[in-house]
Length: 335
Image 1 (tube, rainbow, N blue to C red):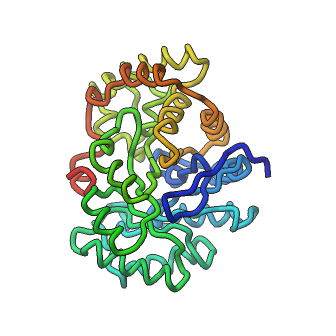
Image 2: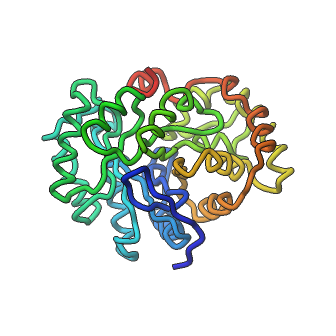
Image 3: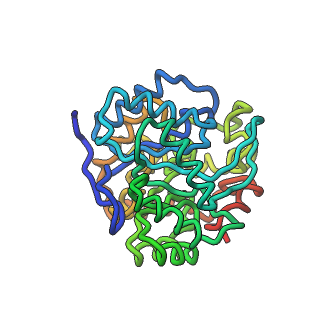
């Protein structure tokens, strides 16, 4: 294995993980049509570069994503991979969402199916995808703790929860990481959530570091997204919002050009500069995009350069929410 990535410990009690991880969601149709063979090559490219953290969810493609990961891992060693799995989202046959259920009995059911689809007898990090409004977090974590004791999962993570909920969860069982959106233009965690996580020894696995492709050279004003692309329904990518946000990206492009790197690489380097307890999850389904992300790990930014970047892309000038209102209402992290 050709290893280009260093490792860090995930939180105070977690495993050693690569400095960046691979997010597999986009391999199951969230951003338009996909190619399984290309996605598997991307998983292999990530592992071969030294990445061991692969993030998936049982509701990504209604099980397709986990089955895809299983297929990719038939050609690699299971012990070389830290599998992070989200669960709890209820899906309908019409691709609709029906809320979240993380009751302990239901958690066991979700886990049983994930173990089968992934072709493994344990999951490294298992996490509720969202806070279940009908189940106390203490009850959910208590059920997960039983699964840790039984050996079915090794660590407990959380996703998109607020500081108070994180404290309550950590009082029941150690939490290794909080998966939450964090990027140059999504910096809401800095006020309360990130300080609380650091106090508790909980790492941040940051998704959306490239803001779903916004922080890249890929989009132009007026871009039309396919109906099955998540961004077709995301406020930040609609009409005048997209145009306004791309003006911010243009400012970032100028700085990136001065450093002879891409906008995406600059955005990843910024996220990495936040600290070793911030582990970016880079969502891609193409090997060349993964190679671009790996190259960003070597970019060193001075304090002055970071200040210039942040001044060029003020988070409070971003147009549109990161999710549609109905989805935002499901985020404990936004309350």
